[in-house]
Image (tube, rainbow, N blue to C red; front, top):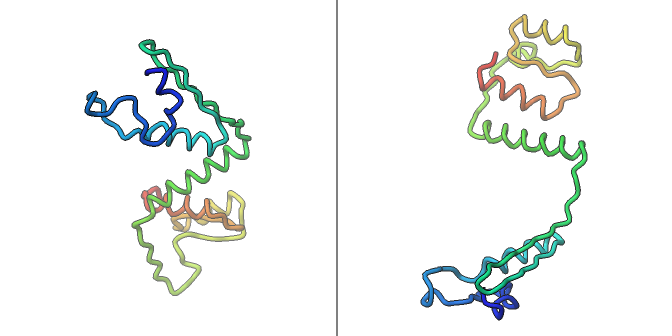
Length: 148
């Protein structure tokens, strides 16, 4: 890259040569977009260029290491999104005149023996109170995948 081009690198539509002068096509928007994104993230971008010797672009972003709690929450969010995608076009019909016969048992009994007993008597799933969205999504995903 020519030395005189570097100061204008982050200007919109700035190009070293026009596409009629070279076979390289482009609008001259790539680097301005990168700079805008780096600025939004509180970072810096530097360009070092030597004509005929290459160009080095360095981006520094102020990132912190996520805590275990943040990592777990991110995983939970991703899992919920994945399950929602799987469930997006599914319909559930529960036609039952007796709430006790619902296919997924919901109970305040949270002991493992209660779960086993519910599954032994024909329930397709088991959710203990308090209800968490993740438990409901798990039960729905397992039911739709035919794991019961």
